[in-house]
Image (cartoon, rainbow over all chains, first blue to last red; front, side, top):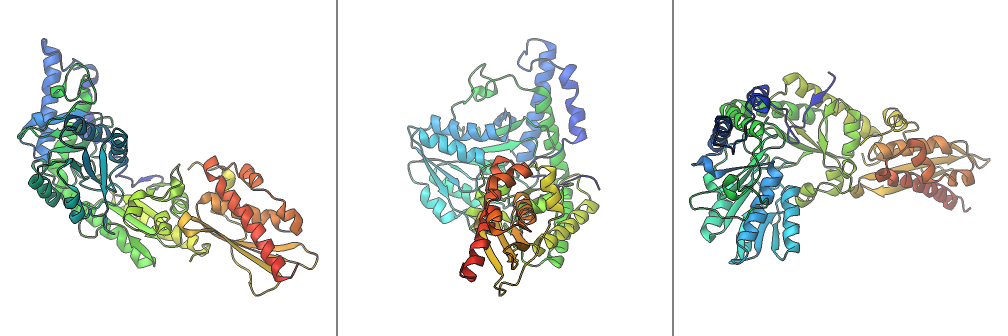
Length: 384
Length: 127
């Protein structure tokens, strides 16, 4: 086997059904979707509105207008945090997030902190679940927003969204969730949130497109980050990229139809992979929550062996590691650190992601290769 | 991480992996780095009656650069006297392996391992 892709949390290939749907909108139906005074513009707009409905349906949004297209989840998260912060600053300055949010939420939080907002980061358990009691305590009358991701991108832990939603509703505070790793993989309910971020390329759609769900009833108000022609109900100016929107819509439609089967397949892959690993290697630890996780994500620490050195030994297998050696800043994963995973085990971690185009053979091959390399490296490890 | 061929050669086929008997007074041992930092090198040398390093062994927990640096430095110090072995600088290792700047600390660790093993040998022998 020459190359095996097992990094589906980083990105996914565009499904060919998605590509087919997108293609006409590059050169045939290229009209500006905002030029509704001629037929070509109207056809592009129609395609976009269909896509909007497809996205809305997947996340259970009641009105397609609640979907605001963005360039991706990073922009959606920026719009949610910055938009709410700026619009509601007179009401309060506290924003509550978790310690394991994606960098684009954390960094937006830090930027807002420099503007005078107060960012509270809620710690997580060893399994990577936010501390609900601390979260509830942190939501005081100065709080304007709670933002907690639905699924963590490194360990796959699913957060208690319903409970967080209840706390926010009860306290009358807006609730945003970064659902980039959740949408299309598990059932998400937009109605449980006020704002939800979605990514295209994590669900076999194209890169460069995402969306922010912004609840209409009751209407969630936010200030735009991008100013211009007032598209997307004034919340996100800029001509919409019709092919990308169409691609996201189609990706959502397929994900909705195939979610159940895919969950079963991925669960099987995960079990098969873990069995080979645990049957053949001692002192391997699963990072994350055994019960509440998405099936396609496995994060393991291999005691005594550094993560990057494992990856070097399996050059044909595309996976990722929480080791500092794989990052430019030489810091191990902040997510694993927040989960109180020992530093050396954070350096020893690998994330393996299964997805729509993974095969049984690939899973078996990858597991066996990892066992072989870990054994070899342990023989030369002073810690083993 | 993009590594040079010289790093990959040593990662794939590391030289001098193993250990020496620490109870032997002719053996000097050093363990440098920390598990929490993601790099630990254990390096041992055996010094012959002429004061030359007759054998060098290492074990490493760390990235490809750490493994390659340890392997290379054990290759280099074998047959050298202690002063010459001490003279090998981390820059020489980093340069030879074309280590990316972010991995320079791995070569520093390898240099520290050599000087630590020599120090340990000297202490054991009252030199």
